[in-house]
Length: 215
Figure: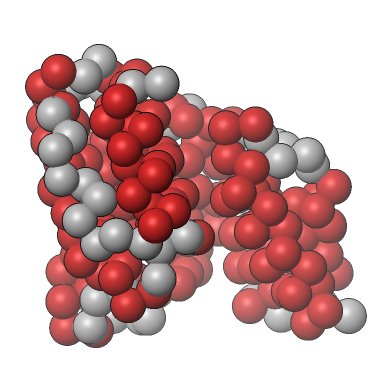
């Protein structure tokens, strides 16, 4: 394992706020950088104490931007930058979050313009989630765009846990409980991906909670 990633995982498990210090992206390959972002996002989302997450994702967002600049024609780092930026917005105050979520949208649009199937359609999934989860303000809160992006993502990967989860959640919020159950049940039935076990299990737990609302 790359020493930087090993230090990151150990620090995250200890809940240290400065766990991103010392990562040298210039010395990493694209695969190393993406692996770092994947593990860091998972640890920050599911291990780090919530009060520390805003500062954590602010730092991780900066590193994701550095990686994207280092590989400007690659969709994968842009997808991860968009996901991390959107996650950062989740922990900001409402005034700061809107600007951050707009930045996430713009980065994700660049990613899907390069390759909409990158990372199993994760750019499309995140765009769809943004368009129905962000309050109706300015260019957000567009249910038609949300549906379109999520349906595109399901065409890329019909068994994708995140695509099925967010489309099921979207349908539930639209009042379509019957179809919502189909997608949420699929989230539970699909085995977690080896590289995303923690995140996928968390999605499955959320899907079970949503299913109770779709009875």
